[in-house]
Image (cartoon, rainbow, N blue to C red; front, side, top):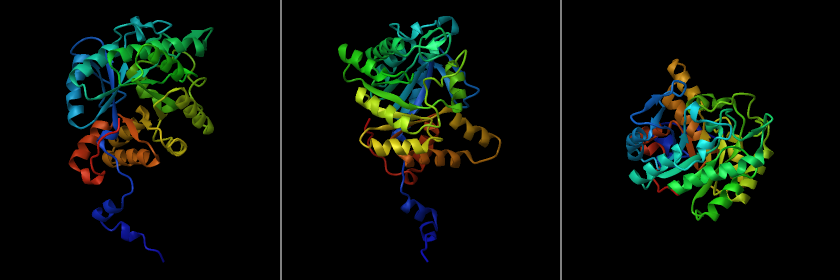
Length: 336
């Protein structure tokens, strides 16, 4: 009889034989940025998260930086009156995201700034590309995404992260950035982004829900596996430095397959709003211990193969990690 229980007899023994560790520097924390000053709008559907004006975001980031989080992901949120059919506000000089990036880099030059590149939050229809006769037009959208990415690069973004799931978006962005002298700006592509029911709280936070139909004609069908491999391979060929799987907690098999296939490419997993809120809501209802569930979900994502995790839990994890570092592995320098 083989005895495995000897590996679990105490917390110290379990820690000794743990095979997966996770640390604060492997997290990316999302921010939702709005125009104005002194604005902090709690998001009811995304408990513990708020929309910030740039000045308030910089104040909040003091804690983020002090906790050891080394990267942030910026989403711009604009008023309905500023939106149009082509998402013009996304790629105008001085866009909300460009202003936020510039301000962050001035105050926190060492932090890595990643910007979301998509039109959905800037269009009146809420889709990720421009529309003709109710059809999302792939190729006509590409120049607009590239212009949006360029504005972010000009402001100082370290990474631009196209999430529109338009074929060829990475190539279009890489070409324009290189032409304009921003070859050092990296692309983190939302390569395997599935059409998911777990995005609801985010769409409320970003005010980006589609006004008609859904996004199933461009985001991936959750019944597919091989398409994810193909999407990642295409993005790497087009110039993506890093790739992403979204959602994360419910797509661990996809994370594992992509990491196994593209082991040399940094892989990010997005622990999305619905996955976060499932734990929050269950914990609030007294159905589970939030800390235990959070750690189990995040460790599972890392165990599957993610190198970095985008999560609204990043700060909560960091606070816990800083008090219990022995549980999650020794601090190491980030490779961002």
